[in-house]
Amino acid sequence: MTKRGERVLDLVEVMDRLRSPGGCPWDARQTHASLVEYLVEEAYETVEAIEDGDDAGLREELGDLLLQVVFHARIAQDDEGWDIDDVAQGIVDKLIRRHPHVFADADADTAEKVEANWHALKAQEKGRESVTDGIPEHLPALLRASKVHSRSASLGENLPEVARMEQAEEILDAVETEEELGDVLLAVASLARSRDWDAEGALRQAVRRRIQAIVEVERS
Image 1 (spheres, helix red, strand yellow):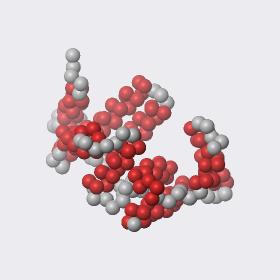
Image 2 (image 1 turned 30 degrees about the vertical axis):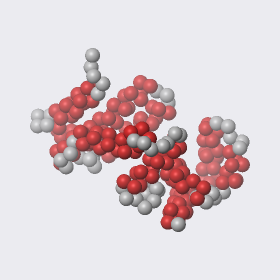
Image 3 (image 1 turned 60 degrees about the vertical axis):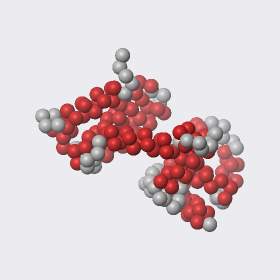
Image 4 (image 1 turned 135 degrees about the vertical axis):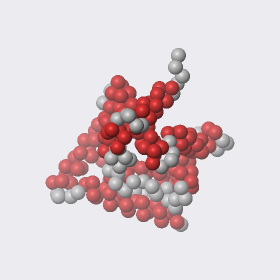
């Protein structure tokens, strides 16, 4: 019987062979930058398998995504002096630090408290002045908005209410499922387009205003 994780070591060995002299010329010439398109593609294909409920497809796509992690680590082993063990050790240490309610004596008895603690600890570790620091500027606007909301939850009642919240609640009172929510969002995008408005850009600007409001609360 194989020990859990052994096949991951097999993947590391296969990548070593591919990147070593006498291996694969294509694999040997890849860089972090040249693999970016594949990393992004595999991530999106993984999301697609999840949304489709494709269990076999998800298993395959996770393998492709894992390959990208091992590939980048092997490149770093050649060029930067760190390897897959450093990657694994880093995430192990991070998980232990970010779960003091499991590995230490901190209190977090709900998922919301766990998430708030995670973001607070992350900001402290990285020396960030705001919980919103580090959210990629070029994320799709809707995803960025969600992340800003999630990370700022730890500020609780100190935050001002989101603009137009009352109007949004009136609309969502008539929505019962995520499918219907999708239809509403699509309708908003369509109406915006009919008026020559950029829905993505408008939301991006609203998110920037929200981040500024969060930073002002944190400073005060």
